[in-house]
Length: 347
Image (cartoon, rainbow, N blue to C red; front, side):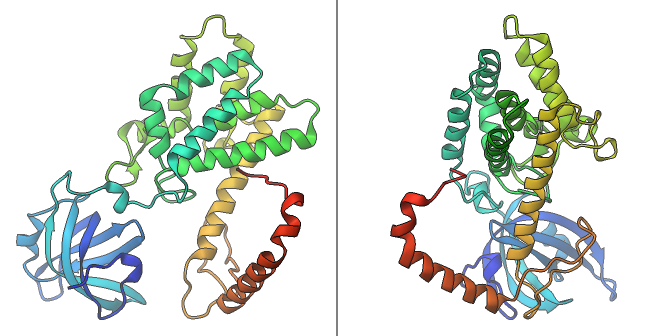
């Protein structure tokens, strides 16, 4: 049987491959026989699966969050595709890379982290620069920050997603600070952008699947982030208390409203800007993901989105494709003339 990836699986395909088990539930069929309800994942997507035969015996050979070797066949089910599994067994740890099974940023994490270092090196405020250097040169923090998703399911839900999200906000923050100028402490705004979600490196687990840690469920990333900053502030000599308060206020208020999880509402210009940029970047990334998903048939609309309380227009696939081809041809013909005039807003 040919090994394939989830994104390539079609009805009637024979399936042979390795997948991550993100759900494992036992059930009883209408005929009274036990079966297993599974969800399988690889770096290209997720798919429902069922074990109908020898479910109890096969189920003893693997657990949720195991990487498993699967054989089966794809069938149509409730408007989608489901794998009917005929054989499944756990793959030994060390025999795979988890990045093959969890979605990952398309951008190189080392290059993105180098951009964080570049941003910090450009700080004029020596106290903020020293604090940020202390945080992001900490080996454990740095490693986790390069791998963490920004969320479990919503925006940037992939390995490296937090880093990608933070750099996007830093790019926006630089533009906003330059545009408005007066009254905005650029270094403070960028420090808030870099640190606002730092607690997510401990709030979320992402070694075998995306989920919340016990600490994450009990405390949340805002509290965890404040504790992390306080620990690092103890290492800084004579760090200005007023500056520390302003920085921590940005973390405490970056969700904007009390009902959205912020202990405080934003009360400084930098905190207000950070709140809106964080919300903007999260929503744009979510919309981009929705637009890029394949719709049923040639539908120009997504299913109803509870997050936005509306349907989202994704455009006609043929129209999008034609427009892209035309745009690519136009770009090829004019890129030399425009090269000196192009302003790169994002690195």
